[in-house]
Length: 275
Length: 183
Image (cartoon, rainbow over all chains, first blue to last red; front, side):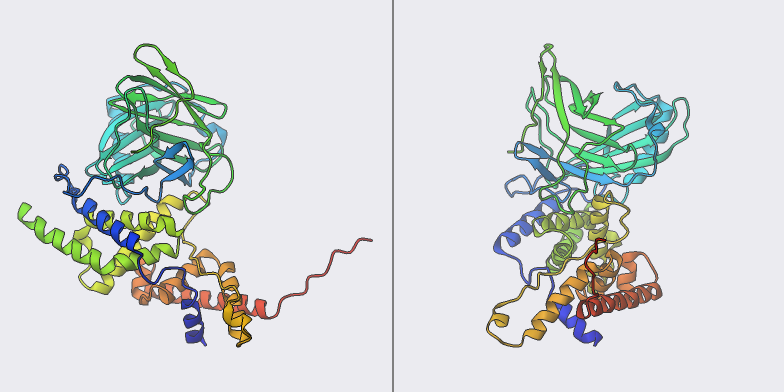
């Protein structure tokens, strides 16, 4: 009977018996892209001779709306609960002392190991403090991957606990943002009450400030070295359970204002799209 | 060190050629087809970096890749409640032409019941069954993917089979649901 049911179940297999021509072609392209990246430590190898066509978005990528391309999203189970968990949060970030940064960065990198980002090769490109929490952003540009951590680290202490982590990106190289624009990078929403969200992306050379509106909250992002990052104690997506795949994924509640070097403020700026 | 690179790349290319279709099918059973390729690409990117950890036996390599793909999926989906297991999809089993032609309707009805019973299983039960039925893994390989012992996996599989049987029995003998009576 067991054998019969197993056979019947196999007749209900949701997977395709064979690859389509398009899948075969993309599989071949993916292979070339993968072997063109450094397998571990060290600089990326020269690009493969294949055209550097932007890869298909990864699983963690979801176009939330026609005009927005989110590089990645994830809603991650968080351990902390209660509004008091982020009571010390501030809308404007502060710098992180070097000894505190060392402790937080080590904990973050450990957390990222085994995830989709190459933690050994990823560089720490940004760190910021908001109250008792430090946010860190690790990056590889090829593949375009961001690993963001939210670490509980009371100021003046090297004690680190409750390390939350989100990873997003694509298997292609990083996109450069237009001079007066930005790209929307990984967005992680940590479950809980109130929960927290963290995001990052690229900014153009003329952009000096990024202000993110997340519902009722206004967040001044950290901007450095062509990247921005910010986190806040609240959601990034409309409430409701996101679907298991990115198709018709959760709707963002974020809007972005950009401040340029000449003082111009671009309100409700739209992210640039991959070519 | 650099002299090892060609061997490493050749080994990876062989692994990719052997296992890509299987990993893609593993992903297609767990996420929408439009995203299965991305999951597969994720898994192979991790495999490329961790190639030194790959087992030598082809069957074990396949299981190792499934484990990586599962890890990628769990990392992404973990926010939808605590996720220790992945739901596995089965195909729709709608009445087909054979049914309409008046050929044996019972197998068709049974397939519909089986698909419905599968969807009522917990993710843990679906995953345990899938690793044996769809991915055709041994208990040892499936257990390694789930991070449990082979004995624990066999027990989990037994429970999953019983759960499926219970759900099928429910389908064959649907419980009577009385209408609400207003006094």
